[in-house]
Length: 314
Length: 272
Image (tube, rainbow over all chains, first blue to last red; front, side, top):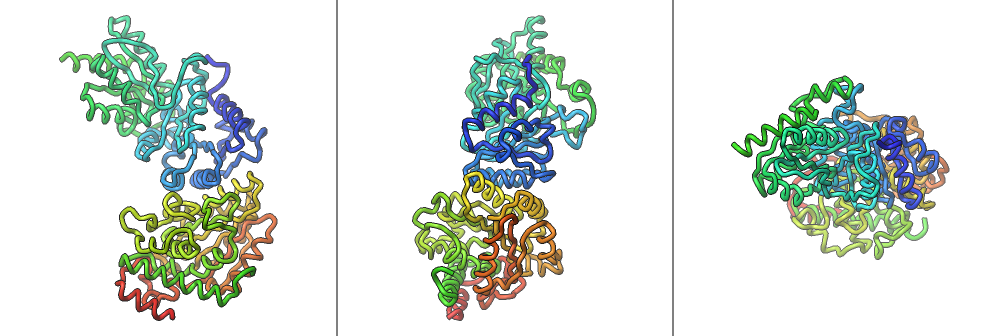
């Protein structure tokens, strides 16, 4: 466990970046308290812009800041980042080849008590349709820090799914985490479990432990970068294990499962099962309740693994 | 005024009109109406008011323009060609496959275009970002933005209106091309947006309303806007959609209309 919350690490990392690079700016749309960027504002008041409850304008202003040579990190809840600002992010930021770093917080069921209206099950899917956009979802505080730094260096727009709360530390500070490359967390021969994000990567590791006891050997990959997809890594393990399970805190359509399946369909047709939200809207509840409600659990990963192994061997 | 007198500017405006009618006519269809209504504004900005360098389109510390009503690109392309940003021959490639002059403004394709636009309602926000970037860089250059009156129906403009005055962007000078027409008819019939002066004033902007085809009025309003110390400025231009193009002026269907190259040449001749 880290001694810091994900959002504290987000803000701290941006402050470190801003110290070294005067072009780094922070934008908020009345969710500074939620994102936790107040310390950035205290230290860099002139580089912090809060536009109020106006997400479309936030992304438009961020695009202009970028056109003026700045590197804005603009955050809001993922539902607004993706759904409400989609055209602004698409045209003013991406089509215009800007350098806007959009952050969608509270992805999927982590929106918990804010309920269905605030629960983005489709943000990755929407974002995947934007050409050249880099999409990533850190699974812990260590990868968060490392990936933000690389996103800031990347010349072009990025979209980060950020779980704000929680102190997971799956990685060591010395581990290499590279934007665009998946991390193999555990090696195994029978099946490959590909997961993304703060909730599903730990569930995948837990599932792998359960499977191990039952004599099933699995590879677990943290696919923190959803676009561009680490094709070579997936193909390597698809060849090695011949069966895959994709796990994501997102709806089944258009997300990581779709990205993996589309690629495999073209390159190496393989049995793939999915642990994701079906064609459903969100609802209110604790994260724990919602994980069970939508099947985002280690138990479900175990079940889907057995199913994919039946297909592989059948 | 520094260089040209109004008569010389009128001559330049006439040339911009001719080239714009010619380039759209060469293709046979295009956004003639809203291109014609901003010709005087583009003329005075590019020939008198903006600190720019056509030989170095990305010159640091230049004035910038966001043409938020990006469909009026052809008028801006004629202006930029005349200023020497690119060869005038390019104007006949307008909207053809592989062109550097697409229907809507694209900063990555056209030398001299400062911001990509086309999805109405977004340009003013971009202009705010540019003005904030200038402030961080301690530049006192102006950011100019042009929005349409029909475009003002997009809600994002009013989010931007709030933000620009909150951020006290006195270097931001915006114009509304108030030509009173939109694709489906007169703005008063489709979705009335008057009284624009009161609206912008209520949002905390300096507001002027002038005849957008009158160089003396444009000259004075822009100079006055530059004196602002703490507020952004909106200059509402009363204009005529299709102004100066015989077959298009005031014609309700002139937003995006087909016309032959022969018709274009006749209209050019009529301009004298």
